[in-house]
Length: 374
Image (cartoon, rainbow, N blue to C red; front, side, top):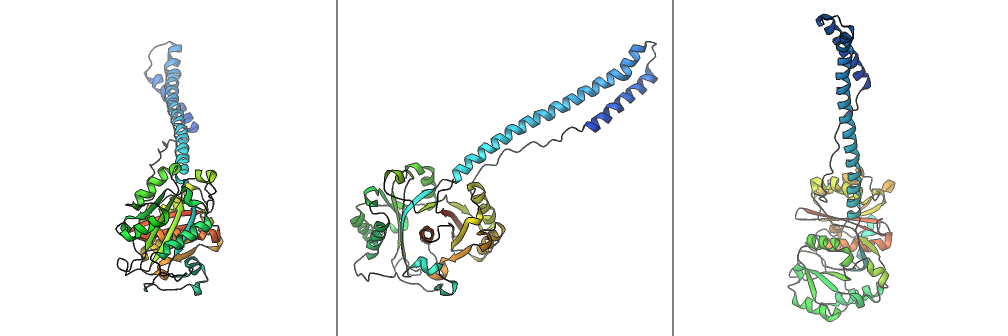
C-alpha cells in the first residue's frame, strides 16, 4: 500500500542512430544502384547513367537517414520534457511527504512509574509482562475520581505553561465517547467538550491536508475502564499538537514533529518504508529506535529484514522497543499510546523515531523527528 503516489510518465526508449551502420547502408545502396543501373540502363546518356546509379540511391538513403535522425531528436526532446516533469512531480510529492505537525507536549500514565524509562532501560532491566493485565500506576495515590486527568493537566502545564489560553479542541477516540462520566470530567477540567475521532486514518489525513489551519488540540486517550478493557493493561496518553504558526504567535515550542501516516500490509512493508525514506529524503541511518505493537511474526520478520536492508540506525543498528512485552495484549487504542510514547522519547534521545503498530491486519507507520524535515 504505502502512500498512493501516481506512477511517473516513463521515458521512451530509443537507440541513437549508428553512423557506422548507416554509412555501410549508404555504400551498399549506391553499389546496388550502380549494379542495377549497369545492367538495366540502355541509354547512352552518361549523365543520366550516373544520376540513376549514384545520385538516386544516395538521395533515398539521405531521406531515410534524415527521417531516422529527426525521429531520434524528437524523442530526445520529448524525453527531456518528461524528465523535467518527473523532477517537478517528485519535488511536489517530496514536499507533500515532508509535511509535519508540531507536538508541543505529551503525557503518559501507565502500569509503570515511568513507562518511557522502563522501555528504554538496559534489556535485562525491561519489565516483561506479555500476558499480565496491569492497572494504572497511581503516583499521587489519589482516590479522587479521574485523578489521572489531573496528572495530565499538571504534566502539560509543566511543559507548556500557557497552553490552555490557546487550546481549542480535545479529541477522543470514538470508542470512549459513550463514557459520559469521562466526558463530564474532561469538561470540568478544560472547559471544552470532547470531540470524537471516528476514523483514525481519516482524522490524520484531514489534519495533514489542512496542516496550516490546525488549532491547538489535545489528543487524549483513556484506557482505564476495567469493564471495557478487562483484557488489556491500562494507560492514559495525551498529546498536544497544532499548526506551525503557533510557534511564532505564542510561547509554545515544538518538542517533536509528527510525520504523515502511512498505511501498509506485511507483504508491502519493506517497499513502503523504503518509499517513506525515499520521499521525505531522510537518511534511514538517522533513525535510532523503532517502537512496535501488535505485530505478528510475519510482520516482525518483514520489519527486521527491512531494517537490515535499509541499514536503519547505521553502524549501531536500530533498537526495537516492543510495547506489548511490557503492557500485554494491544487494543484498538494502543496505537495512540505508542505514538505518544514515541513523541516522549524524542526528549530523551533527540533522534528520529519510527512507530509501527498493527491492528486487525492493518499496519500504521509514522515517523517522528526532533526537527522539522527540510
